[in-house]
Length: 192
Image 1 (cartoon, rainbow, N blue to C red):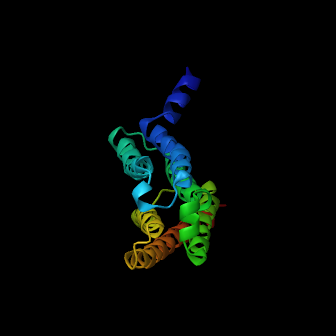
Image 2 (image 1 turned 120 degrees about the vertical axis):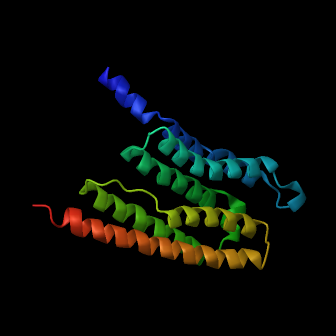
Image 3 (image 1 turned 45 degrees about the vertical axis):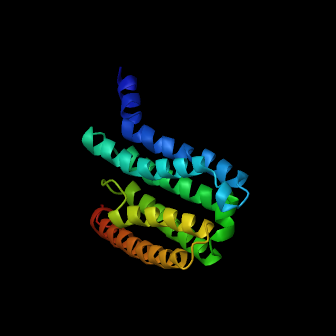
């Protein structure tokens, strides 16, 4: 009976939505790689899956709050699903990887490693749950839109959004680091 309860806590609507978002990487990458680069031939199913992935990022949080399914695992799974889709598209979808400047790729990788790595180090010794902040969600959203504008070569708007994404991502990183430092000072450093 206890095992069934723990399985039910894992398979919540919110967690299933996050897992589904991570799996959406496969049709997105496949469809983008099958594209011949001509605007008229852009695969509309890729647009569908991209929009579904972006919408599911909102939906999993809504499910968690509405059905009281907020959990430590869900707070870990949600940003992990974001990273799987973002990095998967960035590294494996040829039209995206060829369009995005290398310095921006390095920024995204460094930012995500710092947020995820330091968040894990602090949270494992803290009683508090880590979760995405609002600017972090905006950063993921803007990164997705930036990828789209870059792929379609919609300049100068693609460049404007690229720099806006860089600013929002930097602000988000600073807010995460501030939170992690506070949690380290309050929860980790003061432990006996």
